[in-house]
Image (tube, rainbow over all chains, first blue to last red; front, side):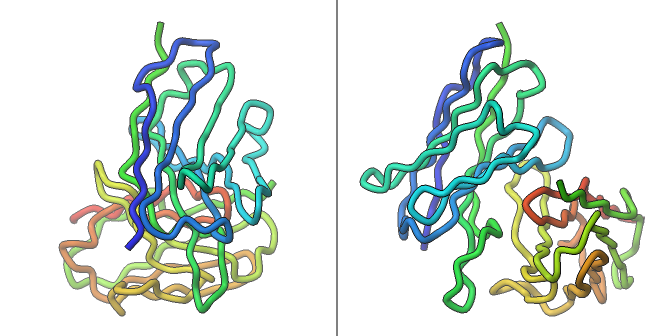
Length: 122
Length: 102
């Protein structure tokens, strides 16, 4: 049974870099897709990006210039960095693991962390 | 960039009713579409992947169908636990459909 837990500062100042870590207990194989998704208060879900397959990344085009997702398999962690934040980046940030269906690894987020609220404020 | 448009945004229904939510993609995505259910204060839960395959443990009253650009999620007989917000997803997410009690 895999479990994901997000961690990081709950508040970040405008123009600074938001940094979050997701710690995985259970199967943290690099064959899986490891995603970050966020949800602004009262709003819908926004896909940020994922890392998989030995370091391949794919980012939401609207965030691509500010996002970096990385992975440390030895620590069973993957991380999100979002640069130059503003109030619009205030959200609950979720990490998620893609599914393995019929032996095929997919990017579809199948297992989610509980989420962590990050507020951008001075 | 692929856009996903869900309809309706809000749906009022009673327990036992059959409901359908539609998700339209701005270009063909074959059957690479998932559906999620989210309740307040909780992370989303995967219901369906590859347009029509139920994830493990999801009740059979949930059905997904479609391919290309048009997809549907149907709940055959709405249960009290089903009142929630539903999202379609292909990388990006649809804007969500809130299912509320009539």
